[in-house]
Image (cartoon, rainbow, N blue to C red):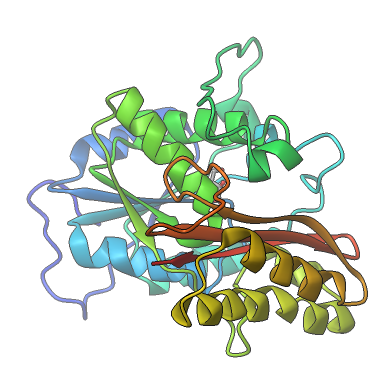
Length: 293
Ligand code: PAF
């Protein structure tokens, strides 16, 4: 690992992956990391989307830290915290292969010890979209990410565009609380047929998996309409809603064309728009998005 004065001499030498399970261990390791630290926070069950962020971090930093923590405070009472997929063995193998230096792998009790009372609440941009469908979700996300930043103290942190609203919320938190972290965003990674990669895709039955393609196809349709000159956000929204509603077994949570910074709904696309979709296929809730302009 990239300890002080121990820069990786050649990729042929196998560098051990350090695993920190406590805040104290993570801090001890952090004190010895030399140069810039890139950080990829995850909830584990890693896929190519996470690994592409790890590669971005690896290319731009001297050391790479990845956290694996399924954060209970960002799940609602009726959501999938208990059944969220977990596979630590595979995750650690993938992170070793990706040349990660440190994995922070705390328990829930380590992050939220008894008597824990503090939350980070980013206002306004959390009222809409995912925030409206999943009350309290972004308070959990902002709180845990703030804690992880304080523990890991990265120079740069990497998030996927797939969770577009999460990116807006984290960027706002970092700006408002003067956190010395640069936020970098990696493009959404897709399966060859267009489905956005997500740890939750494993919940889909084969039928639902096919039906879920309506999301990426609808986003491509929005791009085509925009490329053809359509700027009426309401018209694009209606077309996408109709497509998804016509897919058997798909239940829409929202179809949104919003300002990419404020996430306020648009009537007219003056320059850019974030098109985001959320729909349920059986018990699986999926989100996807694309930027226009
Ligand atoms: O995007 C995720 O996996 C989670 O929301 C994050 C950022 C790791 C916080 O728990």
